[in-house]
Length: 371
Image (tube, rainbow, N blue to C red; front, side, top):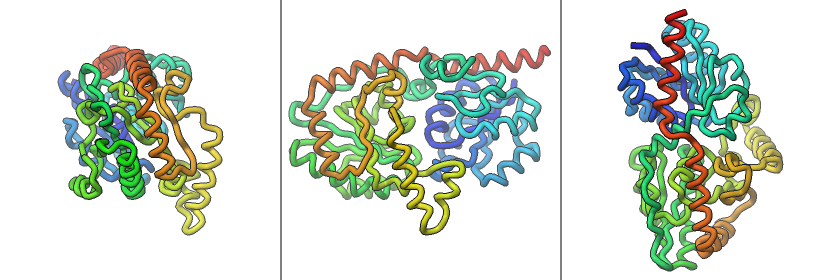
């Protein structure tokens, strides 16, 4: 039995990557520890979710200095360290202190990958940006469970739209009014519209009541059932765009600039954003500037290198959003073509990602033991 230390940070990595990997490692008899890293994108519910995954030990989350002390103090001992999201400085520190090899699963290039013993990814298009990365498949897809038949769309004139308000309080506080207004406007176009809110597993317990009071149906996300029967989803950038891709649900990414001051940022930009009064304004200005240079943010667009789903960034009002959603709901050809394109993209990743990654972890440990 080997000791495996999994380093994870935000909701997407913990839920999408650690969740399918931990049971695979546990079933093989390995002792698994999840260390939750400091993360500007954290929801505050990371430990609650981590405790449901089946690991033998959960460490963190804690502040930066406390996490460093925990690593240097020897609490994070392991035969192998696997980083699932976050700055690789953490993985390098943990691996150095434990005297263990460092492996990394990533969707893209990040500083320090060359210091890892091995790097794994989901799609060949992702591997092209990471020299030497091994394609093992998409952990997110595996966490969703087996593929089902295409969900039946809503009856004619009765479309089903799913809204994803995000995992952080700042997102949801803005999204609540915005989504409720968009849903009301859409009902003016489609009187029998079904508006569904898909809450993140990281959303606080009892959050459902607030949304139901606004006349919205509520489900908790985390599987294919949450989007079954959905004609079109509206979401933010992130791992959930891969969830929707794997479920073959047509969607659009929508980021109203009104929410920019609540968006988390990391590094130096995050420290500047924390400056009282002027920080949020500077952050919004910087994010607006960055948005002009972004090609794609939705994962299916990035994987395909073309526009498969719609992305809207700007000073979007609820009326703008309802008009764009309404046009897509009436475009049956676009809906059918997008559903098929997403299904084809999802199938580009090899199946069995958790098993493949567990095999690679065991291979590295055996090699070190024999050496």
